[in-house]
Image 1 (spheres, helix red, strand yellow):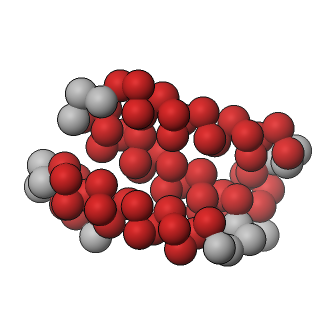
Image 2: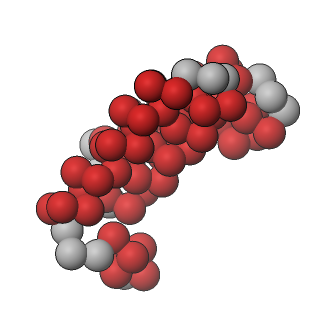
Image 3: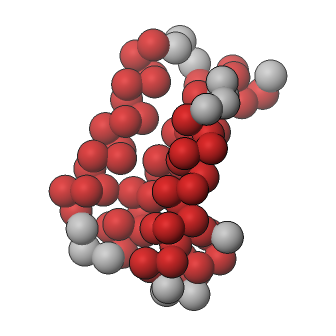
Length: 77
């Protein structure tokens, strides 16, 4: 739903959906899916002109990169 609202330029609604996705994915073990949600949130925040907030979400991705050798391996598992 976040992607759909983002593509419709309904950015505030997209943020709400991406927040829900992040909350759900934070409780799952898949770091790849968490990173995917952080990227999506960062993208919508960029489109909203909230650059510092977008950087915060991008920074979260690097935390997972450091703790795992390859997120792409997790994706293919």
